[in-house]
Amino acid sequence: MSPANRAFGFAPAFLALALGAGDELLGNPTFEDGAGGWSLRGAEARAAGGPDGGPCVALLGTAATGESWTHVGIRLVEPPTERRLSFSAQVISEATGEVDVNAFAYRGRSELLESWTETRPLGEGWTEVRSEYVLPAGTETFTLWVIHAASGELRVADASLQAGDPQRSRPKNLTGAGVIRASANVVVGPAEDGSAGRVLFPIPLLTEHQVPLTFDVVTTPAGALTSFRWVPREDGMNWLAEIEVAPTLPVEVAWESLVLVGERRDAPLPEAPRPEVPDEAAPWLESTACIQSEDPDVVAKAHELIDAGGDVGDFVAGVIAFTSTNQGDGAEFRTLDAASAIHCGGSCTSRANLAAALLRAGGVPARTSAHLPTWSGPLYEHWHVEYWHPGAGWTWVEPTLGKMRPAPFTFVVLNIANPEDEEQGFHPVIAHSGVMLGVPRYSVHELGEGLARPWPLPDDIAPRLNEARAEAPLDGSLSRQGELFERARDHWARLAEQCLAGTVDRDALAAIESALAADEVTEALLDALEHD
Image: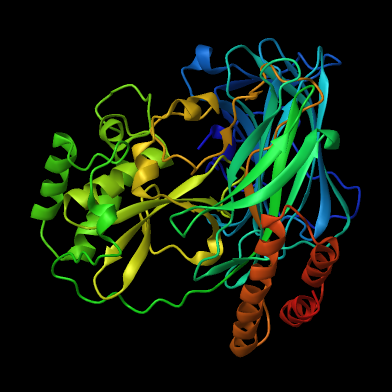
């Protein structure tokens, strides 16, 4: 996860606010560390140096400080909620063309309700950076950060955060069943003049706990899109979107989907004194190219965790406790496979591959699952592991945060890796697509031969990262919610038929979008799906 997706704790509370529209929320314009709620990391406040000679804060950069990023930030207690907040600042940099602006809304100090992660391009000289936020009801603490994650000095001045007019917001994090808006994109260009090609994306799956309701493809500029279609995989689990483009210049290719997600009520896991390997789980017990469960160091660590005692659940808990904290032994982070991860720590993908390898080495079938989480700002993808628990079947765990059985309303599943794709984790097309090697093939986007990743990007393209955001919680009785899921599965069959043919039902899409804004979302969705 990049610095742009991190939240920080620090310094005393700023102040309680009871302000009118247009009132200023920020105090202490001299940016002194710890005063008025300001926090500096790898930075220093200066009495002069702003655009008009006034005070500023200088973010000294990674090379000067040895930090992985530097920042200036503010923390507000009891901020105005469900109102438009407008942030602005003047920024100038001597070495980088962009700056990250992050914000977080919490209930208390730690329960994340909403987050925003934005990368702003910088021009020559001082540039005004602006962002807007609407804090959901229940927000008790708001933090905002300007982050510099490169070398060279970056100065920030004239920071302002003003309260605006009332505006309804929806909480980012669902607390139960609801609808999530998921999206993914990539910027591509022609590999050579006149070339065309395809982009393959993993897309939201139909699973026990999620049902895609809509699917749409957009390119910017629009004229680059030639066609799209869904492609079902032979494994019977995964689907791909195959998008054909003929770009004459760099183009952003994106899909968006509204996904119905459920509220799983987990019974306690049954006692499991030893692993179980039914036929349906047996393929996920073998060692593969990116989940090397026969690697000697992986085997040794698995035996160490088994020797700690306990049943299957205790072994699994020990595995994810290890993967969530493992920093390796100083090896260079170059690939995402399990054998590398045990020595370098790595990313969430590395930790999922390592967790699956350790579980397999201990005789427990395990497979990785790529998804988009709602609890993070935009990122590429995140990874869970599913292991086979005797008497319960496939069971999710979170090997990066060390959590057992994450709730299904906190993410959208895009891919469940099969062993054949694990074996292709070092296929050259993965590197061609700009992804680090050691990830199961087709769990990430893939560029065809006619396309390339343009660099540097044109000034008029600011690529987004993939994202999942809560759109609306379900309401009404559990029985009506159950009826909605049944109707949604019938709707998905029609959606799949359309997308296999490369068409989008705009009327049905508009009806579902409209239903999400209704006062009674569950009933409105039932009506929309009945008439699509």
